[in-house]
Each structure stands twice: as structure tokens, then as C-alpha cells.
Length: 409
Image 1 (cartoon, rainbow, N blue to C red):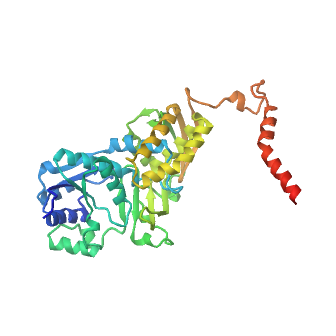
Image 2: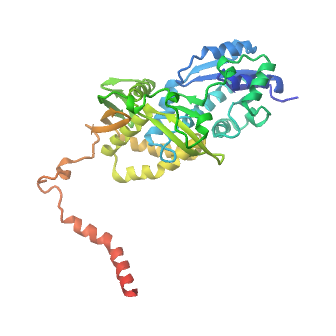
Image 3: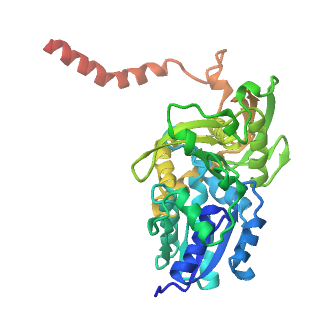
């Protein structure tokens, strides 16, 4: 007899989590609470409520929460203040959503008196780590149920057979062979894995992409965009002040229109295997390019270089599920401190897959001094003779080493 009385399930209403819901009821004989997060994935979420009701879930135990503003404000924006990129390419679209889902699951568990949480991540992937590190960081006593590590339903065929036996509704697309890719979407990105992409030499089919046109099909005319920053966060586009979620939604529309943000990547998963995935992150790609341009004007050189040194560590913490860890929080304090001076406006040109910075300005925090940087007469603002001493001091160790090598040789 299981000691689990009530469990909060991260529930999408799709085949996997519908099977998990029934499996939890059948295996653990416990009450299930469903939680569906609206992170801007662009799907109709009410069918998840309908399916949960069909499984006998009480209406008051069905949670469908709109988390879009919180997602962008408290997770995406802080990550972009750090310019976080994993392995030089990946903008962490899936990774950054998991700590918010874990947070809300734990909140619901406390609200409803649940003693366990459950997720649909497989034992091969990164998400199991991200979810569970989040759960334990926020509630060290919570019980975690990971069905993919317990059951024997380790293939799509077995899931389908289980669904048939238990009368679980299966969408026609699954019966006819299913979507060709495993997809994850939120306001920051959409990802594609599996099937055709499991051959790393095969080019992704153009019909796979959902959010972006191909650069070849993008408009022939460039589009200019003005992006306003306050303390490192975007607060407006083209002079219009917008909420965080509205900013990212609009940037996705513009980026997708101009073929921006496609990525084909073989990444190193936390569990040790390499995995090939394709990603569309149109708004995030614009954000990253514009933010670096704004920082280039406002950040001290050594502060900027320190941020660049720390960024790979910060990105790995997010990728590997350590959003709630003390080291990520500590890094965030430092990063956010650097962003107090990142205020102003960046102008970019969007053209056939490219984000081209064409200008930046800050009325309050610019460190660019034209009287010093000019190639014209600077009226004594900079004494070029000062460079000689600097060069000689920095060359001293090189000269000593060269003299030693000459004596030896």
C-alpha cells in the first residue's frame, strides 16, 4: 500500500501525461491534482481541463495557470541580463521554463496538502534533473514520482497499448503515426527532437519549422526596430512601453517574419549522451544581440569581461537544473548589480535571418567619450605618449623571456 495520498502532476493533457495520470491512480491508488502551466506555448489549454475531468479529477483540483508574465519577468529576463548561452549556441529555452513549473507545483502541493509531485520527463533526458532539483530545493521533504523510471512503458507502442486497454482517449494524430518530432514550446522558444533528427547528418525538413520563415523566404526589405532598456531589461519597442510577455511576443513575431533564430545543435546532455535538437528562438536572438550592444556602451570594460568569464558557468547552472541553487542566486546578485547602468536605446535592423545593430545611445549611462575616442584633434584630452610606458611595462616579461631564449640558443 502506497504512503502517497495526494500527488500534483505536471499535466499537459497529451498522450504521455494522460497515461501517467491513469497510471498514478492505478498504481499508487492516490488522489491526483493536475497542474497545467500556460507559458505561452500557443496551444489551447482547456482540453486539458476536459480530459482531467474525464479521469475523475475534482474541478477544484485542476489548476491551469497563466504564468507568461512571471516566466518572462522573473526567469527569461534575469537570464538574458547574463547573456547566457549554453555551449556557445543554445539559448536555454526549455531549461529556463522548468524551475518555474517546479516552483508552481510545489506551491500547489502546499496549498492542497499533497505529499508528492510527479512529472512526465523520461529517464534519458535533462528535464527529470531540472524538475527534481527544483522540487527538492523548494521542499526537501517532498516525494517525487517519476513514472518513466518506474514503469515498463518505454516505447510509444506500449503507451498506445496501455491507453487502449484503459480507455484513455488518443488523438487521431497519434493513431496515424503521430507528430514526427518531440516538441517543447514556451514564449521563449520551440524545440524539436526525435524521428528524422536522430540522424545528425540529415538536414531538418523545412516543413518542421513553426515560428520562422526560412531566411530565403524572408522579406527583401529590412525592418528597423528601436529597443528601450532599463536596468538591463527591455521595457519598450519603437517607443511603446510594453510588459515583459508582450515584449517577447512582439519580438517573436518580428524575428519569425525575418527568418531569425533557427538553430540546429548537437548538445551534451546532463546524463552524458549527445542529443541533436533544432530550436527556434526568434525573440531571444534579437534580445541577446541588442542587450550586448547596450552593454557595450554602458558597462566598464573589466566588468563586461568578468560577466563574459562567468557566463558559461551561469548558463551551465541553468542547463543542469541549478536555478534554485545558492551559487546561481549569488551570481544573479552580481549580474543584476552590473545592470543598474544598462539604460538606453538600441537600434537594430532585421534582415533575412540577421540581427544587425545600427546604433545605440544612453542619455544617462554612456561611457563612450567622443572627445577621447575621436580620430580628429582631441585638444589634449588624451596624451598618446602615455601609451609608450604602458607598452614597455607589458613587454618587459616578453623581452626577458626572449633574451633568455637567445642566450640558450
